[in-house]
Image (cartoon, rainbow, N blue to C red):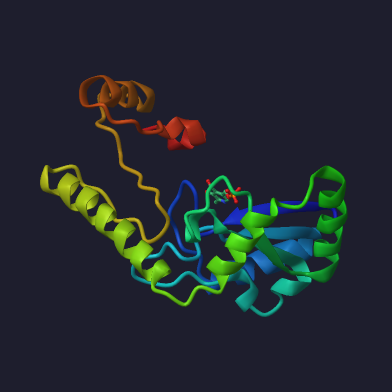
Amino acid sequence: MKKNENINFPGNPVPTIATKEFFHHVIQFAKKHQIVILHDFAYSELYYEEKPISFLSIDGTRDVGIKFNSLSKSFNMAGCRIGYVLGNEDVIKGLNRLKSNLDYGVFIPIQKAAIHALNDKSNFSSDLRKTYKNRRDVLVNGLNEIGWKVESPKASMFFRAKVPSSYTSTDFAYRLIDDAGIVVTPGNAFGPSCEG
Ligand SMILES: Cc1ncc(COP(=O)(O)O)c(C=O)c1O
């Protein structure tokens, strides 16, 4: 394998869910170009209508890559720097070698909190989904009601909207801060094709 490529679905900043067909295409692409695929599945639990597919549930993915998950979003443990990785044994061995030269084990109380979270049998995830879904619906319905037509994100905590045509993304973001006290990220922060 020569290079690696990172994909994140459901995505940041594009809240899209990958399809099985897309993952099949990714596997073929990785094999053809001899690259390793790293699937970042940080938003696996933050979905609203349809559960996102795990990359590793598709035949052939273990030949080409691994899946990361983080407890940052699923268990509100952002900043704790704790997650896990599954998939291709050789890639994980390489990652292990790299990480053991780069940094240290995570602080033990955080590891214990993570074990507790992963063994949790309560409704934490579904309650969290309800909280975010409620916020999403308030925002999407509110904007649609005032005539600002927006799409409802299927997953994650991200939301994208077209800025009014008389503004650039940056000017509009400043206007929201100045006039409404609302902070957003201008689309062009994600590249020129996200301008507007
Ligand atoms: C797609 C994606 N992966 C990973 C992370 C961060 O995970 P961690 O806090 O474990 O570094 C984020 C958070 O912003 C994210 O959006």
